[in-house]
Image 1: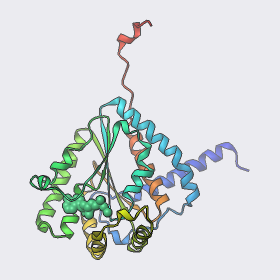
Image 2: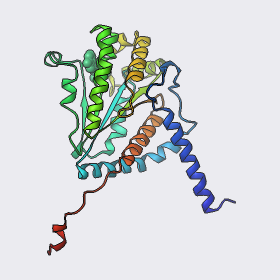
Image 3: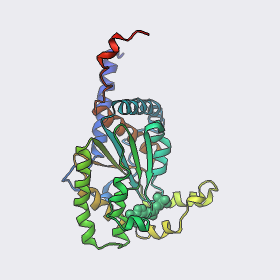
Image 4: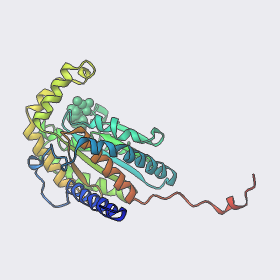
Length: 285
Ligand code: AMP
Ligand code: MG
């Protein structure tokens, strides 16, 4: 029979194994990743019940850490969500990001640029929405559209996109040096899974509003998107602003692993409550 100490050791082992698995989703700067070789069905061998049961505790940790970030008022958190249509960006916001209190959390969605936005450099509309100290901002699509979407649709020359990789790295480095912690998630689904989800949208009156003719046109260029994403992720995963490729065919795995990564990253930030000023020592009420 196992005693209590044995159980603690086993729990630590399992947690370390899990952290090792999660680290594999991080695209190491300078290493080459090929999206076509990443299994979108991966769940680290975990079952749905096990991971679903961990979610409430993780979300409550996220909420506590966000509160401390707000009170500390020194640093900010930027979470970038990218992925093909139906990959689950909205789902992550609904199921994971909702753990954050809206008092200091905002979601920014980036659509086809307006004429005003196109009259500026591509980072202009992005920079305006970066979180202020104490805040969390979640990007539902981002400046990575400007090196993926525009590349696949040939809206700008390829050489411009390649220059943008460097501009993005410089921009994210500057943000990180100005106390913005950056986490970037690519939600990786298979073409087959997208077909299922698009069909589901068509047949479900609550989801039909999301259907867009464009989605079907883009689907025809699936391989081009995969190679543009592979290129963008490989070129722009840095120590300060790492990319995680999240196997996202299983929504419950996607939600759990993103919650884990956010919780771990915020814990590593060692956010502290500010020191009470000594003037409070003599207050009598
Ligand atoms: P959705 O996120 O489904 O509402 O769709 C937004 C659409 O805007 C997607 O088709 C994106 O590819 C497109 N989009 C976002 N940013 C850009 C951009 N910088 N250039 C071109 N298209 C973009
Ligand atoms: Mg869409």
